Amino acid sequence: MLEQSWQQILFAIAEEQLGYFTAAQAKAAGVHQVRLVQLAKSSDIERFSRGVYRLTRYPLSPLGQYMEATLWPQVRRPDARGTLSHESALAFYHLSDVSPAKVHITIPVGFRVRRAVPQHVVLHYAELEDTDVRVVEGIPVTTPVRTIHDVHADHLGAALVRQAIDDGRRNGELTYDEADLLSHELLGADRHRARARLPR
Image 1 (cartoon, rainbow, N blue to C red):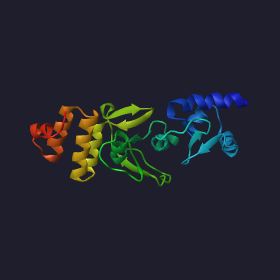
Image 2 (image 1 turned 30 degrees about the vertical axis):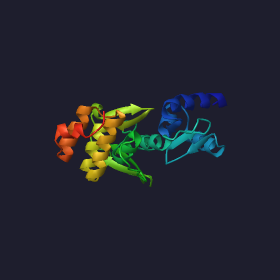
Image 3 (image 1 turned 45 degrees about the horizontal axis):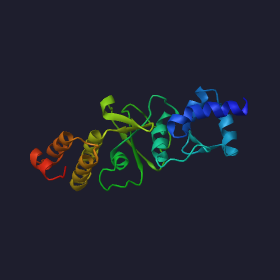
Image 4 (image 1 turned 60 degrees about the horizontal axis):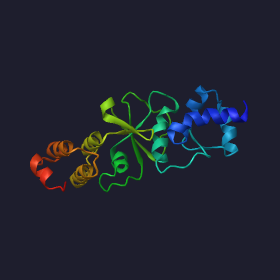
């Protein structure tokens, strides 16, 4: 394979994924695993978790850790890409003061992990509807409404849930009605009072 050829192939894959790609994606495009090892040794690509790589000439992104984590489940099952969720999705949307040390992703219930999960990744299992997910800069992430429901169900403290709702209403990630409904459903707040206590 000509040098220019692998560059074109991998860049085409990685361009919509912040420079990241999986070994499975590369193989499907005609770049063999042996070639990936060679490229890693020559520092043309950088290996992250097993089966996930990044083109070193592609600009680093502060969202890279999220992209890498959501691609990780796809290494062996192309249909099982992870979705950024829970505390990590809150941080992604700047909702509340949570600062998770690990990246939380949700994968399908039927997905069975037969290899070591990267130490910086936390797995959650759920069947997400299309309406539960949005794609931002190539990263699938649960919507703010779904995210707040998830962290509440995962027993995040009421104060942080309330802060996430308030922040979402202020920064436009939640509509007024969504914020009011979440306050009512999850915190038992009167919907009219919940709206009244925040500046418009």
